[in-house]
Amino acid sequence: MSKTLVAYFSASGTTARAAKNLANAAGADLYEIRPAIPYTRADLNWMDKKSRSSVEMNDKSSRPELADKDADIAAYDTILLGFPIWWYTAPRIIHTFLESYDFFGKKIVLFATSGGSGLGKTAKELAPVCPGAVILDGKVLNGNPSVDALQKWVKTI
Image (tube, rainbow, N blue to C red; front, side, top):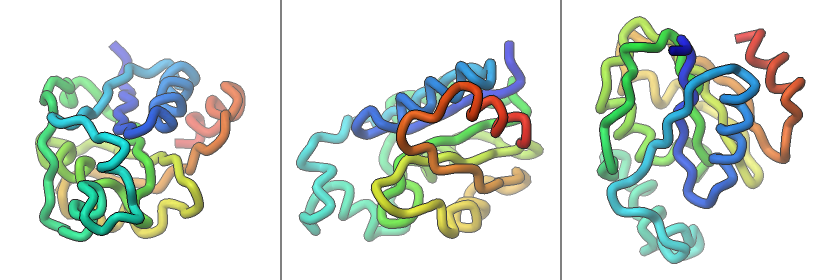
């Protein structure tokens, strides 16, 4: 088993494509973070203040339930953690994921997809939910980075 895991949440498929390409380039295992109740198109309407994603992101204590807790985090040294940027940070389900496992002594490298913003202060915001882990900003993987470019990036981690 690989010592690196690519764990990702994808609401629309964009982050899933990036995660699969990254796992292939890194020779890493892949794990999808899935919500217990999948997001609908209406849930993701950021222009609607009552949409599920808007309500979750406006409540810092919101923790959407996971579909499963099957990730074997103990088997990995490095976790490449991916998600779409929502409201300039990680979706609340990422907090749920990080709080559901023991990441003590692990290195977590963030990657994201975004329609316009970067990772900002996401690493700093996530650090308190996984004490003992080292969380590093990574990259925004928009478009379709080549395997070569992804391999070069992974070697710098």
